Image (cartoon, rainbow, N blue to C red; front, side, top):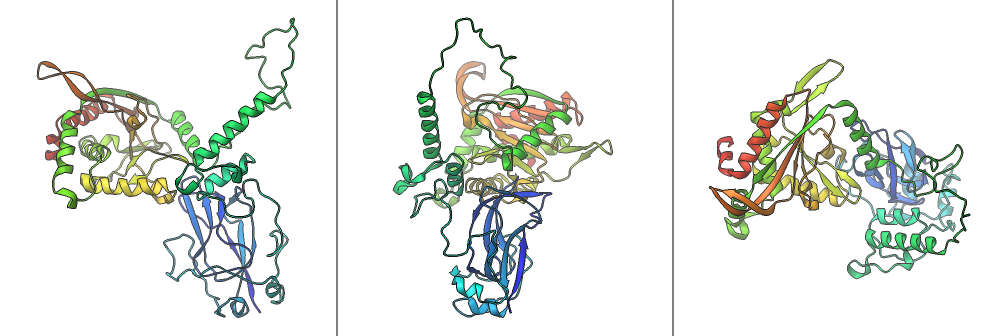
Length: 460
């Protein structure tokens, strides 16, 4: 007699209390192996594949794609035991469970290929039945917008989700990606086109001559009346960022100072380092990696900025290790991956870790641990083609260094006017942890290292 076990959404760590179902990886009737990923969820920190700790037959799923579930809510049920094993194609019984909850912490058991169990086999297996919460195998599900029959040239589940949210049929789109792959930009273009068509086809009402132009106050929504426009839920990564930024503004009395620096020598040093050793020298050093190394050297001189404030104890906590965050823009919004123990790394090691985390951010593979525990953040907004900004501190950190674009400008160099590569640096800091003299000293040291990279030799 098989035993039906319920697998609940596990605690994914870092204080997360809920997750959104992005994509189911199994269906009712599939045979799953221990630690096989069964669902992809999005938390406030990252996209995570959740493995099932049981092996057997999936008898029910709970929650549609796009639904939010709290930690501890049922995800699916699995029939395990000898009878469940007999239902599989190879007759293997899988009654064990690993107890693991995250991919990467599993027992190493190979993921079995997905096998579909005949509906009559499930219904005839004693007490194992398919609950009404999930359509039985073989039943015809209701049509889902953007998910017609047959293959669709879409890889990203986020693209599918966006199409469903806007009732967009993906089969009507021609993808601009390789081999006709439908990209997010294709879906967004179709959404804008549909919106424009709706506006153009809407009837124009005549306005009486005596009607006055509404003031902004008169346009405010009245009780029980909904404001026209698109509503975007503040949840997942975007919601977490909104909460953190709002808390930063509420709690941190921040101030910003900035300086222009001549980055010509830094760019020349980078070119020399990347040119040394030939193709076998490994990945090229990025400007961000060099700036990160400069930051760790500056924080060693001005440790006040590698701090946090304990409001309950009314204490400044000066941190020993530098866990350096860097801002990265992704399709899911702004994320801040963290290079851990950056104070013990050289520029090459920092660059390699930045590369790994950037690729994980691009593919949605960052873990909650990759996005937590930062003590200082480096924000290179120059990639957006802007010169300056006043960053909002990444709470509960005490400071953030902002870097604008490096661009050719007229500059007085060695007493003569010359065209040099100039960058604007800005430091936003928590005025509770230090005064302007400390912040200015930190920023001036960073600028000096940008202008004279040889100064870093003292910090090696």
